[in-house]
Image (cartoon, rainbow, N blue to C red; front, side, top):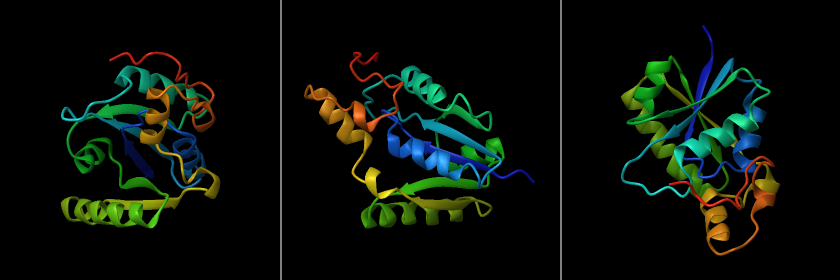
Length: 158
């Protein structure tokens, strides 16, 4: 059976931390689906199309990585694509507590799912999409925190 992992998130924008996590997990899975969650009650800074474009560009050299969007429960999406793993990154102990709770609920909803946690590398621990958005909103240069193809100087499309 193929080992398929879903890496869910908003990726608003994708960060060097996201990129590192996916690249480091390539040896663990046959396929990784980077799944951009669409939550209608959340305001995003960059459009879904822009986020998909950036992620596809970052991972264009890796045919085992797919980029898509989904609505609803992550475990339902996992079922629909035949994934038995959810990939999550941990920067801090607060991340662990939050992700542990979600992982346990997901396990109750879909017994075949396993949540795999990878620690963020120390030099990327402080990087979050929300911090990057705040830097950009306030006129700062956050380019050192995102992959080279992510042009944060452009105006959001949404």
